[in-house]
Image 1 (cartoon, rainbow, N blue to C red):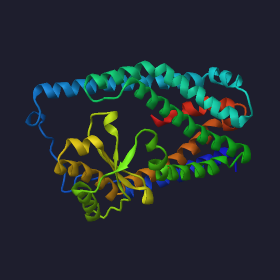
Image 2 (tube, one colour; image 1 turned 90 degrees about the vertical axis):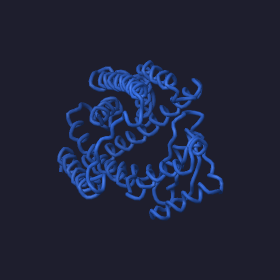
Image 3 (cartoon, rainbow, N blue to C red; image 1 turned 135 degrees about the vertical axis):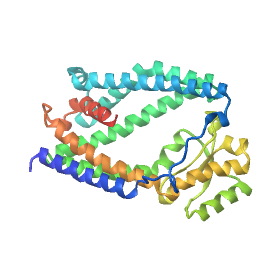
Image 4 (tube, rainbow, N blue to C red; image 1 turned 60 degrees about the vertical axis):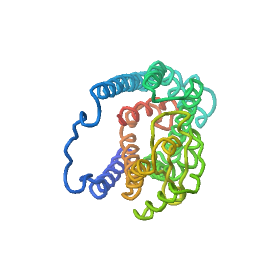
Length: 331
């Protein structure tokens, strides 16, 4: 069977799995008892507060969407013209070294071009009192996120290129399976490997709040390994909590400023919302959708790259093209 046919079969299998998950497990009626009516903001906020909220959102969207548009334009320029291939031709080393170098070139170029928007958005957040982080801390977070993106994308493209070199026709099926499993493993290990890169965690001290959180989790039949406090206040003034991980890595995370800034009833209301995500297996469903979507993406990529010259995804010179296709398809 040709690569194109195998790619179409892979995409079809992934699409069927995706649709089954969507129909069977995504809650299409998210509000039990019927739809809810929209609350009148003036009952809870002053006109100035509403205007301030809308003003913040307007410019936050402006900077974010502008950054996205420029990032896509840069990715398209590198991936859909000869410029990207010319840049990769200048990189040294064997194919397995040129792949991550090519990913780094594309990702770092995109970040450098969009830095003005990142700075503008950060200044906007600070002006509205939603961030307490220093510029140096912001720079460290930005660099860490970029290194993480380069590492993850490099690993994914290496799987694609390696599979294409080993199985010239069947690589979409092999790579799609490997990357789908990687999505599941990544969701399992995310709390242990990624979250500590951006926050420090410590167990919530023994006391009434911890006891009530564990009792609430038990009442909702949610098995959590621990309740941890994140040092979020060094970065933000927003109050939040979340449940992360799957199975043995699942834990409740509460922001330190949530614990310090709210009473127990208010804090439990926030945490109860997050426990509901775990009770309804939202992380698991989202992970399954991500795995199925990855299979679809690899299958469609296999169809698209058959039109590319010189080796498809096996050729490091096509890395910018692969990244551009993924970026456009993701949007």
